[in-house]
Image (tube, rainbow, N blue to C red; front, top):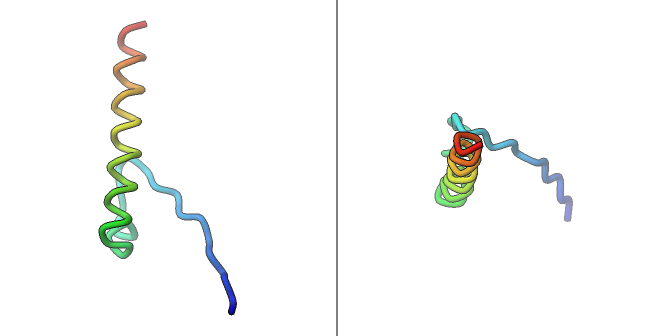
Length: 46
């Protein structure tokens, strides 16, 4: 069995490639988006 898995960089802006992963891709994109939003809120407080 050949496991040629490559990492996929998920950006806040998203991409059509995420849709190819279906529900898994959307869940991971939402995590990235939420983390970015939290980071922005912390930066505003400083």
